[in-house]
Image (cartoon, rainbow, N blue to C red; front, side, top):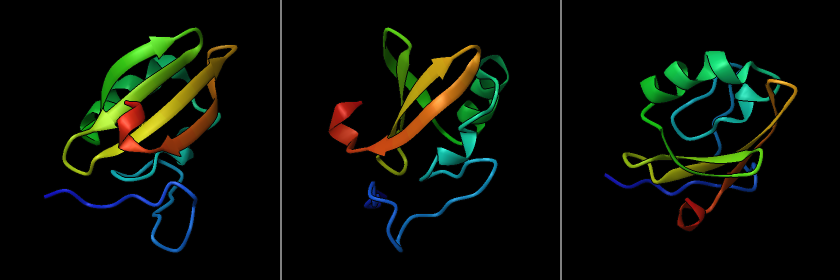
Length: 85
């Protein structure tokens, strides 16, 4: 089943400190090395990297996240349209 994702952070977006299947913004500030396993558990796979940014896609929800690392932690986590993954 494909579910729409509200990338703008509106009422349809689920946010939690540990990340959810449709919103990974809770990973901001977390260790890059320690997050890969949790991202996989949530159904995400890294699709590509560009510089310090990596793109994670969940095929079950069609959610896509652009996660930018700095000093070993995710400094920026933005949910983007699935076409960017």
